[in-house]
Image 1: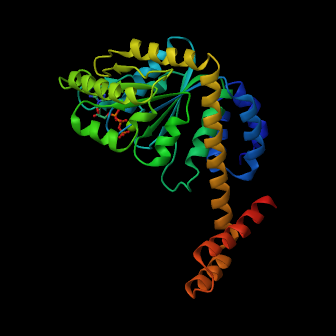
Image 2 (image 1 turned 180 degrees about the vertical axis):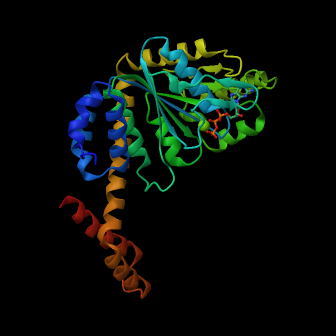
Image 3 (image 1 turned 45 degrees about the horizontal axis):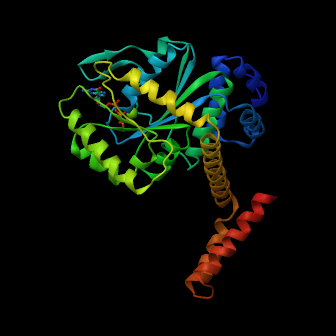
Amino acid sequence: VKRFVPSHELLPRAEKGELAAVARLLTRAEAGEPEVRETLSRVYAKAGRAHVIGITGVPGSGKSTMCSVLARKLRASGKKIGIIAIDPSSPYSGGSIMGDRIRMQDLADDEGIYIRSMATRGSTGGMARATLDTADILDVAGYGVVLIETVGVGQDEVEIASASHTTLVVSAPGLGDEIQAIKAGILEIADVHVISKADKPEARSTVTDLKQMLTLGLSLSQEQKWIPPVVATSSLNNTGFDELVTAIEKHKAHLDTGEPGLQRARRIASFRMLKTAEELLRDQFRKGSAERAARIASALAERKVSPYLAGEQLLAGVVKGISQ
Ligand SMILES: Nc1nc2c(ncn2[C@@H]2O[C@H](COP(=O)(O)OP(=O)(O)OP(=O)(O)O)[C@@H](O)[C@H]2O)c(=O)[nH]1
Ligand SMILES: [Mg+2]
């Protein structure tokens, strides 16, 4: 029988890059049990070295394939690369992710690339908190770049992608996708726009259309210090990735000038604070307030209290529980 190794003992091993310790710590962080919280605080204090890149886009736009190629490219710098996929179906395990057309090299054979899939199914809503804790753990384990892939559908997932240092928004050629991206409101969170599948003939007009649209938006907000570039890549032909890496590096340099980086850090911090508070609230609701909630709801149903007062009463009990 394996001895339960406390999280605080796993941390120094993870910091040395021991994969088994990293994996166990990640599992604990994802579950978010009280036992790991103290360790996560220490992780948070130590993190902040890695460049975190959020990648989002509508389903099927080519995010996972792009992550694989980008990770390989970034590896050339010698840095270790972490990939967090908030989508268990994401094909990173190698094999035939380009259908029958090409076979991606297996990323798993590179010790310097660590891939972690986050379980979204059955998640209790703490996905953002868990994802960003995961990024911190990879950071302290020496991963210099952490890529986070989220499907650009659903507010939480879009927000997670934007809670990174550099956010890539992926659009695939074809008007359908583009309209979807606009609808999902994800274009505006881009630090870098990536048109994927540039090997397709329609890609040219997608680039033109997107640039035109961005120019229109630009005239509204003057004095924008960072103008998101548009980069076209093909994972199939392995083109555009030098440009993509350059765009990412430029954006990092922009953040490093001072104020933009501080602003970004504060934005990420308030997002994490709110998401963690949300998770604590939800936990507390689940734990003990079902009976009380039922009581308050009856009073509400009988119109003895107002919905606002009922909400306040429910919250008062929950908040007291948290501060205990
Ligand atoms: N022609 C072409 N097809 C590509 C390229 N990149 C990806 N694809 C194909 O597009 C499809 C979706 O690719 P994925 O990388 O799984 O896309 P995704 O955005 O991660 O998809 P979800 O995670 O399901 O949202 C696959 O069939 C890929 O083979 C490319 O550069 N060129
Ligand atoms: Mg994917």
